[in-house]
Length: 236
Image (tube, rainbow, N blue to C red):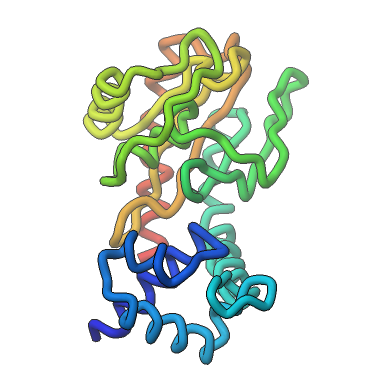
């Protein structure tokens, strides 16, 4: 069992650092080089990694990892669509489904509002964890260190203590909000979709900033929290 765990840890680090060498992986993971080398050999034989640019000392993931990820993503989309549609019907606003990826969340699906004034984000766009509602919803349920706190607008939270307090508030009320912290013209509320090991996605209601006054923010927050809980239950 420990060999399997080691191989999975090595695979995760190769994906995060590719191209990655044995020495770097051993140092980051706190494992002997011999253990890392065995794991790399196993992953290579199974088709999960390959030598980077033909160099056997550095490794990168193959399309096999991508294919498995795509199948997982498609399953998530299929489960999320009816929940997202119900949320759009109840609010009349744009609904986003995002997944965590490194130090960002990535938009993988959206249902747009019918209203003429709308904010359109392209599929595949990456939003910062600390400066978006979806990102903060995910970050509030992760134990990893805080990401780099870059500033995007005047309201971006860039103080670590202030962000910690914000994330505690997210956990207490069940949803995160965005008050123009990534783009000043966007407001949103979002809630995390949780798996056994933490957040696997987030759902959000996104509007032009002018269309989310305080009284709606709390109402939308409760709706997106319930929607995320429904999606979480459907995935278990």
